[in-house]
Amino acid sequence: MDRIKLSRQLSAIENGESSAEYGEGPIVAITGPPGIGKSCLIDKILYELTPELVVGVLAVDPTSPVSGGALLGDRIRFNVLDDANKAESIYIRSIATRSSGGSIPSIVNDLASHLLANDFDLVIIETVGAGQSEMRCAAVADRIIVVEGPARGDSIQAEKAGLLELADLIVVNKSDLEGSEKVFNELTISLSLSPDPPRIMRTSAIDGTGISDVAKLILTLEQRASSIRAKSRQKLLMAHENKIVSNPNFESILDRISQEGLSIPEALRELND
Image (cartoon, rainbow, N blue to C red; front, side):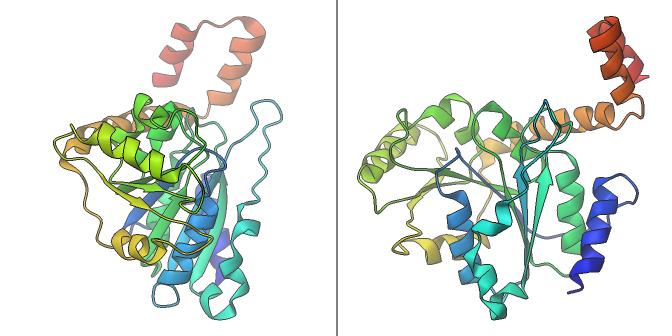
């Protein structure tokens, strides 16, 4: 692949200077709390899928609400890039959340579609963290994998936030650590009353437990019927937000709110005109 050309194309799309090409293919979001091992898990999955498949990874980084900057350092966590044979089949790009109200900027959908239109077999989206904002991954991904693990305190916190309602697969990572089996059992019991509960699997990036099985399942993972409406809701909310954020007057209206006392209802009327 021509990485320089592709990077320039994605930058132009991200900056609103160009339109994305639209391709079809699997878009999988992998989400979960910070420190749960999402990057390590994705790294091991890439070892399994490449070089047979060409895989794009869009790693979303939070933008500081104060400075407006983002670290964009996700690539340093992927050891698979040190393998020249596999690295040729992998493209990793960090995406700042920018003005997005949630953890997933709406432009990610365009970037993923553009990759699929340019001979990528699969796009993986790694999200920022967990909580209500993580439900936004439903607006850009076909399938959602929620990563949990031991030492989380309240192991069903994600369910309380509604995230497990969207999950097509739950992965209890760090299964080599004490407490992982307890989390696995708690999730299994908690979700047993659902008419179509998501599958729950255990993995470890340290000893390789379950990695191959998860990698294979990603390509055939089916969407849960009960999650379709919840995902549609997120898609609609993101579409509305995108309409507001893409308004050329968005930044100037923010200035007027903070500096001149423009009311929120009046700001919304101007942005929706």
